[in-house]
Image (tube, rainbow, N blue to C red):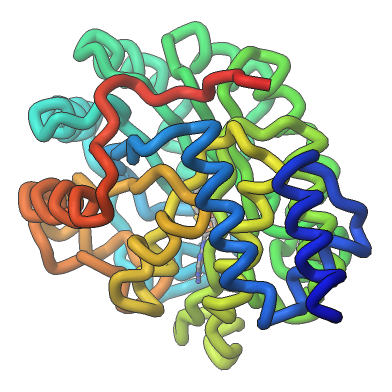
Length: 347
Ligand code: SAH
Ligand code: SF4
């Protein structure tokens, strides 16, 4: 792209938070746009969500999954996956530790594990809420009734990435799952008053800058409260094991463009990014992100929750991660968020 055109587009995005699919795709395709895009995203981040970085304590509570996503180590056909399921008591105990580390949110994530019925999960959510934490669930697709039971138990937020808005790519990579149902879940979650997080994977076979542009416009269209974007980290025990890792520069441009178009969103610097590039969290926190999700899972479970290999910080203790992240955030001249750090509406 011509320099003038590039500058014009970035200025327009920073000022109006709107771009056409063609304009977005042109920026995502342009490696030379990256630094200016990231700088603009950093200004918008500062103006709309401030300098606090919110830490969310991540509890990975079950590695059983009934789905078979081609990229993921927890897929049901992966005979090499090490399966575990924490007990409700263990999950609540980890949430209590998250609170003691000074986190204000517990993110409870798992494969789609039918053992955790809505009623069982709701009982856990009620206990965690008693600790005074905000609760985010990331447990995959459920019926609206199940989402309602969990919401009524006190769950505040829900993470469910659309992964890609390209129906053909989605249905090829997530066999047995329908794109319609994924959209239905996101609509139901919004309707029930959850803060809704979605997002996409970068580096899926067949994906282009045009599909990524549509992903970002979809996040904007559903008014996503949170958007998690991370590179594919190939897992050799999965059918996508032979793929190239997602491009971290393209990932950074997608994060930055997402901040420009969704100025109020909570946007994490993802673990997948840190896995591909040491200190990527800082890099992404300076390119539009304002959230980090340190892992509070302990012991064997911490190793066994292997969506992808080489997961950053897997060998560290949760205590270490807490101290490490605070230091890294301060070194950026930012502060650790004090408070639940939910979506705040400015516009
Ligand atoms: N089962 C739930 C939550 C756990 S998976 C769900 O699917 O929503 C959480 C996220 O991990 C997925 O949304 C996917 O985007 C990401 N993921 C899975 N395998 C991955 C891989 N190999 N590389 C990078 N991210 C991956
Ligand atoms: Fe299961 Fe989620 Fe992995 Fe798909 S991405 S296999 S639903 S854990």
